[in-house]
Amino acid sequence: MALPPPALAPALAPALAPAPALVLTRLMLRDFRSYPALTVPFQSRIVVVSGENGAGKTNLLEAISLLAPGRGLRGARTAEFGRRAGGESLPWAAAGRFESLPWSGFDIGTGTPEGGPPERRTFRLDGAPVRSQAELAERVATVWLTPQMDRLFQDGASDRRRFLDRLVWALEPHHAREVAAYENAMAQRNRLLGQERRGDRVDPQWLAALEDAMARHAVAAAARRGLVGRLNETLAGGITGAFPATRLELQCAVAGALGQAPALAVEEGLREGWASGRRRDAVAGGAVEGPHRADLLFTHVPKDLPASLCSTGEQKALLVAVVLAHAGLIAAARGFAPLLLLDEVAAHLDATRREALFAALAALPAQAFLTGTDAGIFRPLAGIAEGFRAEGGELVPDSDLAVPSGASIPI
Ligand SMILES: Nc1ncnc2c1ncn2[C@@H]1O[C@H](COP(=O)(O)OP(=O)(O)OP(=O)(O)O)[C@@H](O)[C@H]1O
Ligand SMILES: [Mg+2]
Image (tube, rainbow, N blue to C red; front, side, top):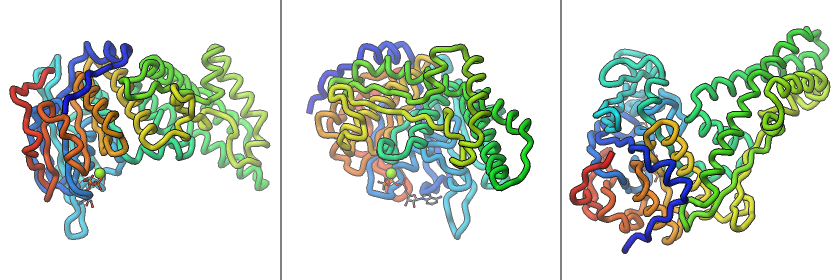
């Protein structure tokens, strides 16, 4: 079956085109979840992993996601990664060999330190210890789409905020600290207001200091706003013909105010608002206003419908569009296209959208890893992708998706 010609949005193509791809050419795992020992070379820009439920497809993508800063695509705790044997979690390791300009090739390893506790995790770059995750962020980036994200439109606003914060964080590493500092100050203020309500005396200066900290860190809302604006620019035309134009809207009074007034004036307004709203917030059990109430709305532009009213496949298409646009922004910011980890991405897409996705991936200068239970749906990728079947803690080459002839990965 021939792939339809890719119709990349004009905005996305230049965002990604000048950036070389980051390419994972070898992955090694030791006692990582369901993998006792695995060494697998990757020779193509599109890699398909199929297999039954529980075969280890998501584990594999998770291992790759852990080669970049952060807690990986499941957001799991380090102690969960070690293969369970005899009721215990074994020490584990994951290592990847990467090719990416301007470096000729480098190795990143992560896992439990020799003789260290299972909840600790260290990184090595070309065999040497890595001091800060920023050092890794210069070299490696991953973006992912997982079946858990399908619930995004039905879940509460806090899940969409977390989704947005993760996208911001991938581009602005200090964002996570700002959000955490804001939430920490707010939690302390909520506790004090609760004590006051129960009749304890609370020092108003203490409350004012916490409100001051909240106001200073509320500027994190500006980073959210900035990213939504840049994503919208990329998304305006739709990623491909089969993927709908998508519009994002950040619903957040603070972010809106930051777009109209200097940050210092907004901070001052927030401090005053929280100071005069203490009684109201005490009754409500927490701050009624602030960037912690923000929500991210997605609109299917051609239908002018909120994503929550779209079909499952349409929602998936919106998410694919957002994730590819985000990859484009990372490529523009870092100078290399991130690895795309697309778990079960084809499941809810019809044949037309699936092939449009494959065509878009074939045209993007990024390496993509795709998983699915049904190997058959990846057949249109024959000659473009290499395939593996996950089974028994191993990856077995899939003869229907042999390494494309003459595959030398362009970087
Ligand atoms: N720490 C661990 N030690 C041993 N096995 C684990 C560990 N963590 C997860 N597993 C097992 O790994 C197996 C594979 O999980 P994974 O999520 O990768 O499957 P999958 O191929 O993505 O399946 P599905 O199609 O259902 O999504 C599961 O059976 C799970 O129980
Ligand atoms: Mg899975």
